[in-house]
Image (cartoon, rainbow, N blue to C red):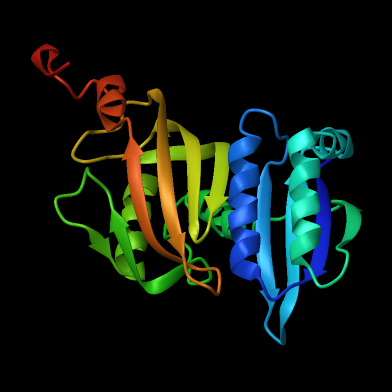
Length: 235
């Protein structure tokens, strides 16, 4: 279970505090067990500073606290504070990346038969799609739905989400496409062939959680080979 330590202090010397944290990061390279750190300033009280440090577990946090470098930096930190910092130890009981849920929702909605669903709860109206297989970028929700319908017309398919990572407003999804070629696709008549294809998609999300832009990389050449659409000289 992920463990989070909440450190609160009061200081008017935030710049010095940041330099101190930079020094700790450098000195504990290869030793520290913290996986993520956020330092925040209270908007209503500029002297109130909160640091949120994430660890894989409580035991790893205790290992981190036991580092001599951590102890030295903590003493310097106390000297910068108006009062002794307070610590709150928290076991994480729920951790949900909301943007990843939106991206995952698309991979759930895309498969199916017939017309694509509205998907206006997933994409903004002027969504911008970058796909190297297309001569021009696809722009707009209606154009995205037509793209989805083209794949629906050609395959009975599904996606398996292999990995998802989120940073800021970006979500990266590594996926595997599983399908059966049941209809015409790019002029290729149905073969009944079972196919698989791997790919990675990066989505950019808006503050309200919808997808505004997407970048695709996938093994389209491998898909065409499985469909028998390539001449030997093209392999």
